[in-house]
Image (cartoon, rainbow, N blue to C red):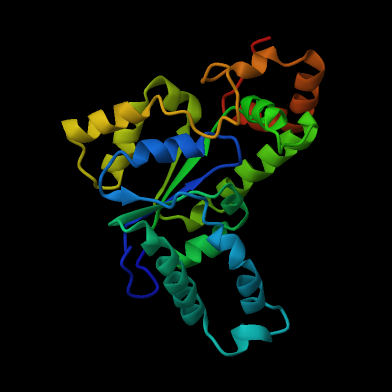
Length: 250
């Protein structure tokens, strides 16, 4: 789990993984209650920007930059570039959160083998409801369910690449935001005293990425969806919902 080169963020990078509308923005807000952690005021999309380089370096025909750089050099190049971006946060630790990162886990794990990976899992029915309600989201619940299944499966499929990995249920975070966040920080070796706990608690009520919604913040809002929409969701995502312990309450 050593970084591929000298890095100011060695053992000090946190990557939050989850599909869009899973609550990652709120989780990052809670984590930033610790003074050692910092992040950008926007989603970096840095790994999406590096995807062309990554594919070029892994061309099956042996051409591209892979003909000139070995695997270690490629990893170090990726790390140095990302570190330069993350340094704009001006903090000891950096928290990276871009939903699209679920599609780029091998790249991220290569550049940041020493990072702390948090996979936030939310009831897929609530994720679908939120995606459909968002002004930029799909209007098709089945399509949103497919996106959720793909994203969760992708992270779990590549879990073996992530030496420091934890799964956190969004519903558990809702029930005990201070306790769950404290556990994550202590897992990363960061001390949590009364002042930090108070800072986390103060952030609990911050509304994040609501897009004008006025309904309550919490879990189980999928119960207001129509039977038809829920049937489409279960046709696509029923196996994963059951695997994760989410059961239909209707």
